[in-house]
Image 1 (tube, one colour):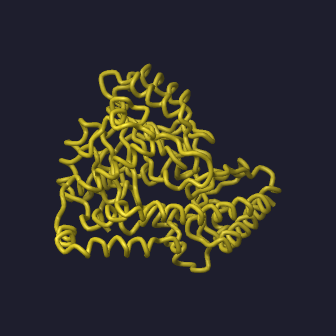
Image 2 (cartoon, rainbow, N blue to C red):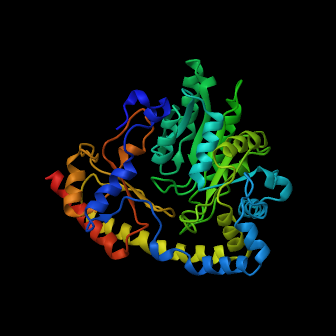
Image 3 (cartoon, one colour):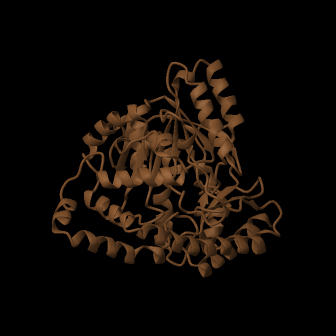
Length: 425
């Protein structure tokens, strides 16, 4: 094992083994466990048919097939970037003029996490500040820690980050003469991880307005993580945060096909403000000088043939059944337990649950070990809170219905109910 003195500062900031690795080790060590922890996609919904059709369309043209097998550009396959921009414009209900963006502002990456890293490394220095919802996406919180960035938690509710709480934090930073260190506000805008809540349009507009008004000497960006936008099971779509940024200089939008099509293909993308395109591409060029080109051709073929929208309808129907199975089990098995509450999602892959205040859901707590003994795995909620949060509750858990069958969801919820009752007795 390397001595800490032999490691870079960023390696030391990254810390030890990640939560994902720890949970996977527990799951692999006990194959009988029902994992309601990992946010993977349903194995049965993986798009074998659409991927085959897209592949065959590429292979039917030898010149295109050879191009797909060659290196691509750092920014990504231009026809794919054009389709991505057009799809976002159509989803937001904007005209080309209102969109005020070009395909040159789209950067294709190996999943949205690479885009988040590239943007963060481009605009954030060590000891800079980024505001995140409390709770927030724990993998990105790890990325920020690895960059030496201060993640400051802001209160969130069943509608996401609270704009009034954001403004209070902005005022506090200004009064403490720290506002110049604030570079971004991170928002998972659709069916967020870990709560599966979607921010309403009026809050999106308010956050963009706050970022613009408080940009004093340095620009405060909004990093919009829209990875779950397509996983909507009930209700109406909401325009992206980018649609509330009239000149396109404040909001950075990150998207991905990992959850909505295939995690194995690993195609993500970002719509960047014009002034960030060059710096992000320079950094990306030093890392990979282009994400996997064949995968981009494949996703272009999927979108070009309208195979993606058919697939989305199928997985929406499948996940709609699964989330209903988890919520029905929660109502029946956990509803009678005093102090247990949860958010009822209309999309995404997660159910966020609150237990009685005195229950420690952490890895070292009695509930986690009892849950494993009963046969179920969950994500302790404390890992989803930025390190500089006003309060980090120890009684929250994140459940995912993405991987298990409806039968296993029921079995896992029964095990969780037994474990909770045991620690409460």
